[in-house]
Length: 298
Image: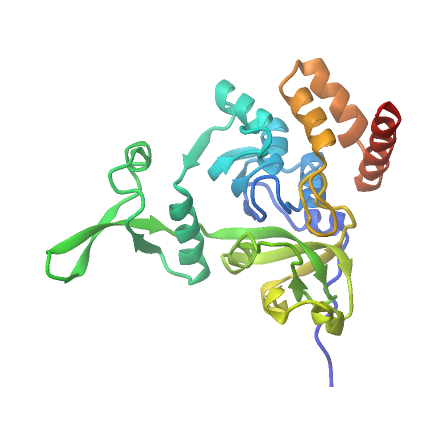
């Protein structure tokens, strides 16, 4: 009897499946467990006119800086210890992203839930009376068909955030696409995968299926193989965001990134040339050299 399919892929093989104009959802949360190896590969690629959907961090910053984004749908774009992602800030101030949709965090979550359930919208109260509806007049309201004793309530009809592709990063996965997180929070990564036509998971380590629940509560098995089209093993692939407990956020590197992003064009070019011009192996080697320099200066 034939078993589940081996879905292991390389970073470049994943990016080769992507096309100009796609809507791509990126999992994680701000500067936490972002699929940065895949994001860096898109940064290096010739892809353009993308729609990004993200609780954003450096993923949004890098891809807006590279001019990849035609439309951005987000609830926030932050690096936590740097409140506003500086490349995103620059893009917003200079108006380089043609279309921007900023949603309440609850509305963003509801939009993903609607897409995951293959519904055109879901109703909710968040957003009523706010400028979200003023600045996005295409978002409609609906009346509840049920009178619960105070009339037919008006609700926001949050449109589905349908994704062509979802990209997420997990601590462990097997070769079939089952994947688990080991940190404190799932960050809605399963919702991104269910809202997408295809989902790719990068992970710190590919293990056998039994290893996914060894010393780990089975409830942390967030993704099952039915959700996932491809698996990429990318050690340190979430750098410089967190991937607890494998590693925490690289604050020194993040400060260097933020300084370059918020500096002159020459500052950013120097950062790009050192860290982003080569492939993922070159990036990781440059990060190791940077870390050694920081330790020598301490």
